[in-house]
Length: 211
Image (cartoon, rainbow, N blue to C red):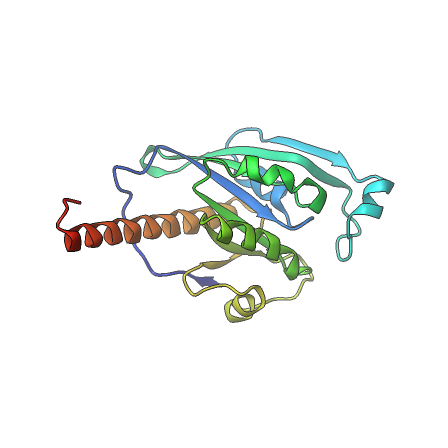
């Protein structure tokens, strides 16, 4: 399941060599697993055991077997072609830790929003967060074993995504699947970059100013 805007943009010289990417989504969506699977270094993780208090505070429907949770962030790194490096920051999923998202998103160029097929609605806050801040993102549907399988149209309708937002299938446990999702995000960001550059150039031409 891949739905992208079809852009085959080349990496322009002005794209920075290091890119900060967020991995977001609901509680138990697979963010820590995703970062761990794709990182070329030993990932930094702030996992803690799910306590009885946490079970009372957090909704565990569908993820009752979850034993640990991220309380600050996950961090990893992956080197892409042409010398570009992605620094990955996984966000905490629980509502009580959302205040950290503002700090984590500072300087971020894009995000992968993991959608849990067992609790698809839990990705809504992340989608809304990035849309409100104008940060480019894709939705990666993490299809857990035994979970429901959604088609791209179903995901778009359920989450309220525009046609320009790529939707990809992902298995957060697999390096190849995770890097494929990141590649889709980078292509999407490059398309956004090109469209923005074209808009600026067109506006400058109409006003008689040099681009």
